[in-house]
Length: 100
Image: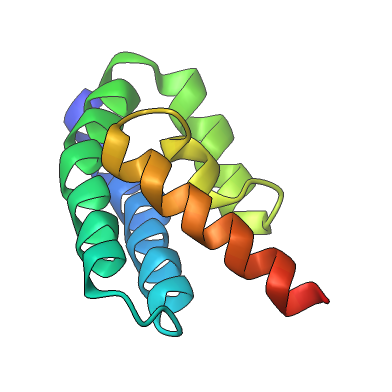
C-alpha cells in the first residue's frame, strides 16, 4: 500500500514540482542556477517520496493541496538543501521583480 501512495504522490506532486521548477527557471540566464534547480529536485524528490510512504496523512494533504492550488509545490522543498536554498533565493528575487 505504501508503494501505491508513493506512486500517486509522484504523479500528483513530484511531477508538478519538476514542471514548476522548470517553468520558473526558463527566464533565468544563469546556467549555474538552472543546475542548482536540477540538483535540488534530484536530491529531494526521493526524500519526498520516502516521506509520502512513511506518512500517508502528509502525502494525502499535500497531494490534495497541490492539486487544488492551495499548496505551492516548491514549498515542499523549503530549507531542505543548499541547492534548494539557492534556488529559492533566486526565484523569490525574480518573483518580486515580476510583480513590480
